[in-house]
Amino acid sequence: DTGVSQDPRHKITKRGQNVTFRCDPISEHNRLYWYRQTLGQGPEFLTYFQNEAQLEKSRLLSDRFSAERPKGSFSTLEIQRTEQGDSAMYLCASSLVGPFEQYFGPGTRLTVT
Amino acid sequence: AQRVTQPEKLLSVFKGAPVELKCNYSYSGSPELFWYVQYSRQRLQLLLRHISRESIKGFTADLNKGETSFHLKKPFAQEEDSAMYYCALSGQDFWGTGANSKLTFGKGITLSVRP
Image (cartoon, helix red, strand yellow):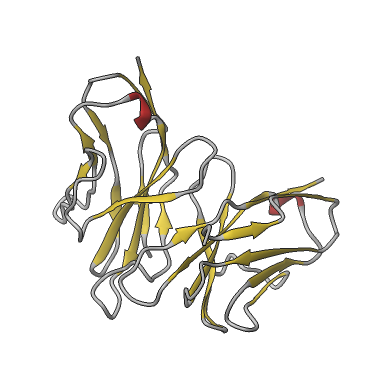
């Protein structure tokens, strides 16, 4: 297992377009988290899943954002009608349920032009 | 609301010098505190957490609830310590830890260790 993977690593899109990112967690990790990181800031929590259930969403996650984890394995994060303010690094992390650390993926860098 | 403050953006020291990266937090309950590190071109990774009370790569951090601080220290910096360091906080969960909860990060500090 090579760890948490994310695809694509980079995405450039025009304002108003929809984009979708994928995260593959470490095998058997029940929990999956999404964070967003803008320049000069630390990662900010967006949402997390336990298996296929979305347990918490940040108020940062506007109605243009939707995340799914349909089979409790990989997850997708979709942004509709992208805005320039959505430009950021989108990080995924996974963990086992319990007192276990979160392992982060390499991130997907989104640039909205 | 939970908040993590890292007051400095950059710390530059010479090899062998002591290092202290500051972190203050605000949280109404029982927090768990973490330090994450990101080396150049690598992903974010956990360095240490306060409940473990471990020393990792020579780094230690003590939770001071009175001062609401969790400063990261190393007595003798090495060039390979150069990286971005983030302090993070979560609330304690069912297991008495915060590892499985959402993390609130500070803005991070760049540590540069010169030869």
